[in-house]
Length: 78
Image (cartoon, rainbow, N blue to C red; front, top):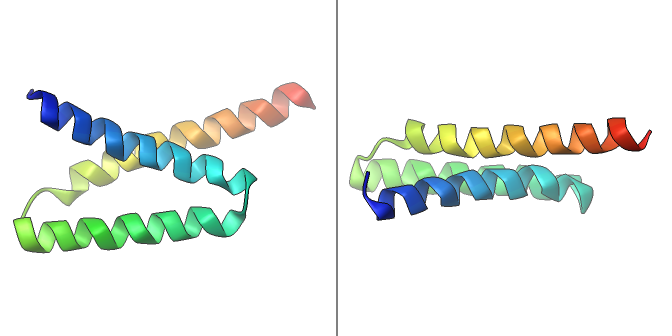
């Protein structure tokens, strides 16, 4: 795996994580971040014919981890 591929994967993962955690600031930010990411990926897939589903997986893993962090925060603090 090239370093640039790893950095791209981590960027998608991090954006998913921050998208989930942004619900603490404003719930609309999560929806906006997801829509921005979706439009970006569909544009990249259309123009470059790359595999957007892999990038959605990385985003989803980050988003899932963000939700787990939020749930654990509320379970532990309650």
